[in-house]
Image (tube, rainbow, N blue to C red; front, side, top):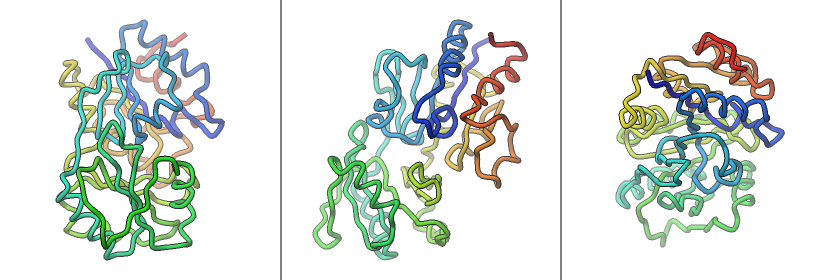
Length: 275
């Protein structure tokens, strides 16, 4: 009976110490020795994932960009990716510009670490911090003369305590709108807009169909809003203690990221001692 463990990365196994603890790496090795398939599902692009995940990291697959892409980690073959047409990109961007919302348009996978940005608010520090970090790949855009093209996603950055109701508008019902807490200031809200039906869960289902793994034999671990669809879908769902309070009650709670909570989850899931 095939099994798969799918873990989020930032805040779930990769903490504020900017590393994955050796005990967690050992867990992934041990699971693979037992014949259990391992995967990471992250909001990171392929470029930023490779900056923090070593080539030797013991996973079989990487679900990247919140489900917009799927990579065989062992062969580095890109198995799947999606994108918005230039018409869709224009339609979404037009509404964001009308709302004077700071946002970025990312190039198609695997080059989606490059982006064009539109900014309207000088006080959106998290937005500007992200541009500073990726200034080598960031291109400032002007609404009046911008030439729209195919894109992997649009990313809007809203400061803490912002009104998110704009993203409930009907114009966005044709797309996948994914909320996440900023990994930079841990307070701002990042709103990612993808083609319809893109999510960690949808790509995990695609992977399980390919591998002939039943949904009930999936263990998923997460820590944030953009993990909710994956946790709702998985047969066995766990959430770390450092998750936002309002979502922790829905799933089996485990110790925090820095306490290697994923090891406890694996023990519960398999019903045995791991080591």
